[in-house]
Amino acid sequence: MLEIHKTSWPMRLLVLVLFAYLLAPVTLVLPLSFSGDQVLRFPPSFWSTRWYTALFGNAQMLKAFSTSLVLATIVTTVSIVVAAPAAWALARLDFRGKQLLLNLLTAPLLLPSIVLGLAILIVFAALGLLATMQGLVLAHLVLTLPYALRVLAVSLSTQDRACEEAARTLGAKPMVVFFRVTVPLMLPGIVAAAALCFLVSFDEVVISLFLTGPRITTLPVALYHYVYNQADPLVAAASVLLILLTLAVIMIVERALGLGRAFVR
Image (tube, rainbow, N blue to C red; front, side, top):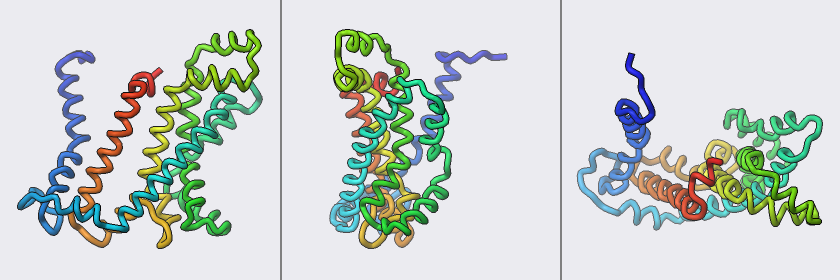
């Protein structure tokens, strides 16, 4: 029986095939975005940038993009501010029911988005939060907080407590220790959690479908409705730009800390 090692050629070939399979949709979307045809057609009969021009000239799409950008920024900020002290309490303090509390806070990760969206719709309808920025922020926080909490809790659990103990021994107060010692040590985890929360919020479509309306909509929802009504390459152009945005976020993390430090401890 052939034994396959990590560095063996069969394993490398398998990884290459898997990467090609995962990236195949991207290789199709890119040429489609430069199609000059009126409808989606592969391969395009001729090349053009008309759909990028149409995208940047579409006021509804630009407004939805602005809403998604603001929404993701707010959600990411609030997620980190709330999850950082919560993760510290779960990682550093020992109290009864800690594991139960952690499971409760991360429970939304286990629920299907359709179920979560319907539950949020029922609650928010009674509170008058439908089609509002406040409602979207709260709904997205339900999704992003568990991710931020998990990432930051793992980051804290892998840290050496010697620096914190040394600071306390030298007379530093708990808040001083947290902001001047703990936070700098968990900075890679904070950056990783922020990047993950931003992408999750910006790309969320299922829950947003329940909460958006004529007054306010996000870019993924706007694209969903556009594809439902029309079948032209404008959505391919938007997809390419979203892929570039995702790569930009990853590159920022890589430039700032390196992916190894941010996501692996």
